[in-house]
Length: 109
Image (cartoon, rainbow, N blue to C red; front, top):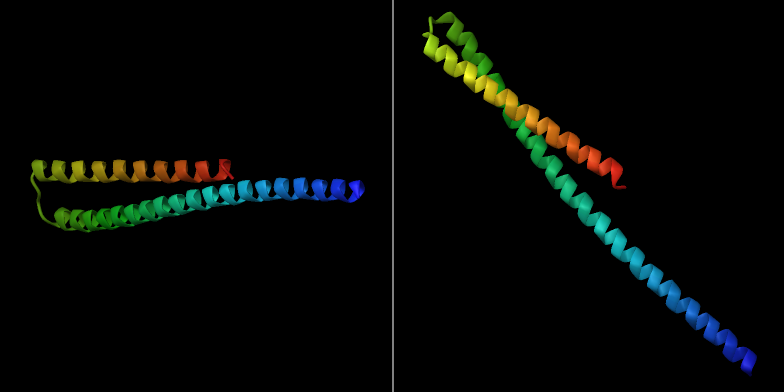
């Protein structure tokens, strides 16, 4: 009888340990799932920002083509130049942010 009790106690201990490990694994998987969800959301935001910036740049290029046909004042040309510089800066920041997200995702798997 003592032999059966020892076996039952060992099985119970293994079962408890196994359940604890499963609980830890479940917690880790949920954490990873949340991280992936957050990263996907950030990537989506960055893609939208890139698309918007690209659209803005295309509009400015069209406007510049039209402006080249008309004689713009230096002030108007300066304003266009400033807009382009701002958009290029915005695009670079967005690309850097996307790179940071990609780097974080690759190194936290």
